[in-house]
Image 1 (cartoon, helix red, strand yellow):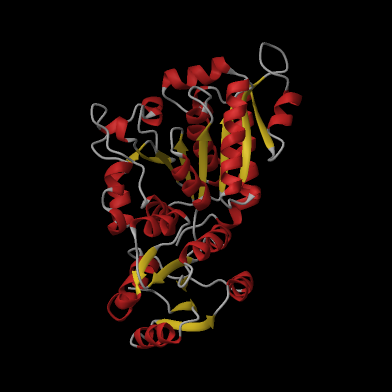
Image 2 (tube, rainbow, N blue to C red):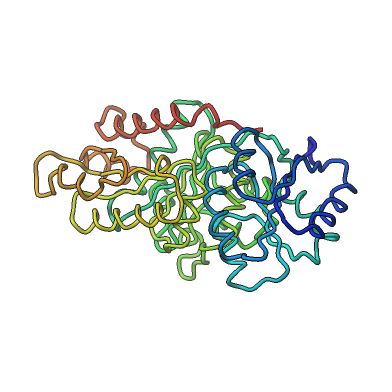
Length: 386
């Protein structure tokens, strides 16, 4: 059951739609309609001043345009859940609503029957109260194979735990190889794809029974390739945002290794994440790919404050491009550096242990630890669970 009353805002210019929503909500004393607006500007002003768990948005009569404008608001107010309603629905319209981060799509004819159950499903998440604190999602995107994104994800999650003494979750979205399972020597019968197959029925107990514990520090949702390498399930799903919401309820920090996502899924993941790293090396190919990924995220409304390029295996000497040239290519977003320390990174992988165990005084370990400390400084005040 919902632990506290849920405040709700309705956005519509349709009087009949307003009347039906009010009637449906009045039947449930735990759901409080606190405001009604006709324009996105007033809605945005309200959300900027006060946290509201849920907003119902009538996207008629121009659904495509309103969804486009709504997407930027959803990216900004990440704790608020948005339900869209319309007179009609098509596969394209449904997919667009899910891509921008809407949590459900209802037909207006379904309001009387489905509005209240839908709200309870979204706010509850098996024990998640409307005002429960949320953990942080850190996405690690890769510009090319072999650039070190999995090494970063594994060790970033471990350092976040060591610095805060709070549990972390690693999610492996690499459907091709399953790098995290190989890195840490983990095996399991189920993984992230099995969770996604349950769509909106995912809850905290399903996550807890599916993760594979590495140690007291980290749990792992294994890649499909780690579970069924010969026939891995697809982990590109419109329900990924919902699954990650549940992870945020359980874990203060969730780090997602996502090296081979489609453009659409990369945008969805970055939109749901507190911070996104785009990992590359100092090569023309990597830097161009990284810049394209960054431009894609920015053009789809992901806030630039939540994106950062990360140049891995940085060295002042050698065959790589100068850092000054890299900064010219990556000038649209900030750039972080991880120094070249290939020997210790390779030792960590071969031993199946994070850098803190295999090479605690190495340069690469110090750089990743500093990166984790920076995230904690920026986001740690909000990284708690209910």
